[in-house]
Image (cartoon, rainbow, N blue to C red; front, side, top):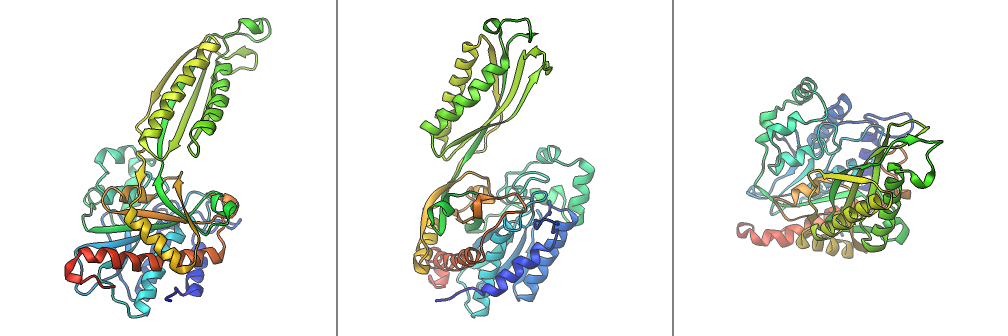
Length: 419
């Protein structure tokens, strides 16, 4: 059975990790920073050395290309991203790009001409240094000029970063593609489910939706020493009760859904004044809009119950949601068939983090799979996936692409359904 060159893959992974390396073993490559640009240049050199074609689109997304003969109008894409969070780990995103690249390199080394052109993609700014999932948003036509005004860097810095790689706002908006036949992404799990179960591969069946609600509990300020406890209208009591009750309710009724209150502040904010107002930011996630609707209704009901219990008023406002993305059965089945061929155990699971795949699912059959993360650590210099699991994931990418070529090229009669 065909296998990737594991020594070459691991060498590339270690070599890439030196670009933006931090003293504690992590990497620091925010999108379009000098370190990210150096990583992009490294990837371009590796593509040339492999004898693959190189391309960069108007959004700065880079592709290693293994063309079909004759060139197909549609293409199968795989990959992830090379940028990192500040002081992050060496596997998040980077492993997904390199296993796709290694799969194409292995096919070329073995003289296998695909029936459909293949691309190994590095998407620009998955990690939100400028805006989250920026490169894939451009590809699927979800960017607007107004999005650049809401970016996380100021207008001059945005122009400077774009200029450094030869792109513009206008080229970003023109980067939409209509030639994607399928998309597949490998990613580290960033959790403990695979490690805990001893399963090799997590086949993602949906990427969760995310909803956020800004909440304010209002009571009455009072002297913290002289106001009797039974007469207080303490806004923090209402907020604290809500946080604990929401946790219990979601765990009991919506597993594996999650909720979080990650921002909380009290006014007037003095140790000797009963809090008159408490602001908190609520976020919750699940794999379908139906579940999200139910969670939202229950959580709002809890807000109102907690406010009434402590004689408070409460107001809340939702922000625009991230819509759940359901994965393609066609691509998931290809991953699972390939895993079975390789003797890899697998199970389906939700992804609770956002990934470029959720955007790609808007324009083509798409899916992704996880390899284990040791102790579930991610976005941290201690992020680690074993060499053995990296190699398993890479061989799975190779054979997933072969499975997709067998199944999807049948829909393109000019290629006769061959590999």
